[in-house]
Image (tube, rainbow, N blue to C red; front, side, top):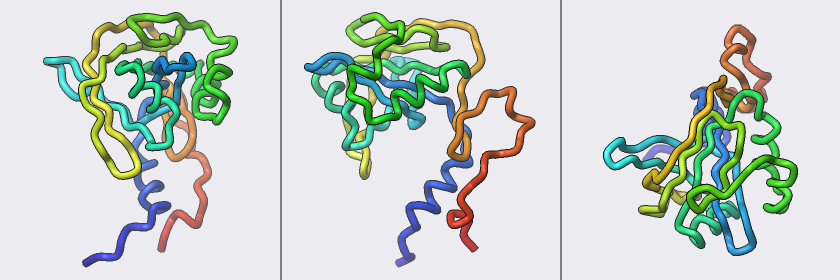
Length: 175
């Protein structure tokens, strides 16, 4: 049997896949909740399904379990501060302070995103230290703009594609 992969090396390898940056929101018993995520994907067109991977410790997962709904928001490159806010350990209510948002289709919907998709939970499946959430889209909204991209541990816009990648910890490089 092969030795298990080093988690830091695995994370570094995965960081080389550029992804969009999303905020996932839900309504919990105490109010709105949200987290930044990049482990998000469309799954099916018919029916329209989304996949979101939630850390077992994510407070937003508890809100999703409570409400049976979540929304995925694709962030614009102007929303790097929003990504940072929802990635923080701030109390959930504080994450929404000062942001323009409204309740839409049973979920907190953030304004200014490239798109948002409200979903009803179909499955919550085990996935290591995460839960794989499958939701059926029930409504969506869209705006024009440029996406916020996550690559090698940093936020990028598509216009950054000529720039050098951010510094990477040499200890993660391997032999």
